[in-house]
Length: 143
Image 1 (cartoon, one colour):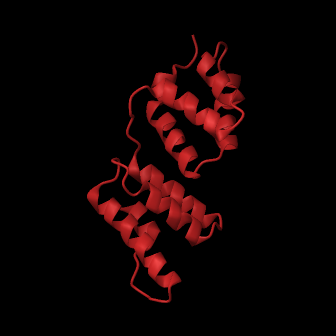
Image 2: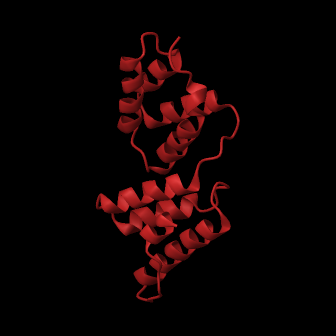
């Protein structure tokens, strides 16, 4: 028997939230599933279905159906994905919108949630020509 998808619950929950928030691409999830399929003699059908999902929404639906319960996502992993988006050259406006959409997720500590709200509000104010002090996203991830 091949790898059990239950062993990857935390990662699958990250994929679900990352796909929904635009932090992870469908292609990245497909590459991950394909890697498992190629390594296993008899891969679980779940990995094959995930690999064959045609759209991000199909993959999200499959992940939701498989997880069945609300698996919490590691807040630091989400912050790392946000940071990766910034490092890849995505505009801060896009990342700010992503942060705002994720800030109320229960997996963040109060401190992390506060940083996300502060960064999002600071960006909105800066967009309107009002400046405030912001904390670098990389310092939140390192802590």
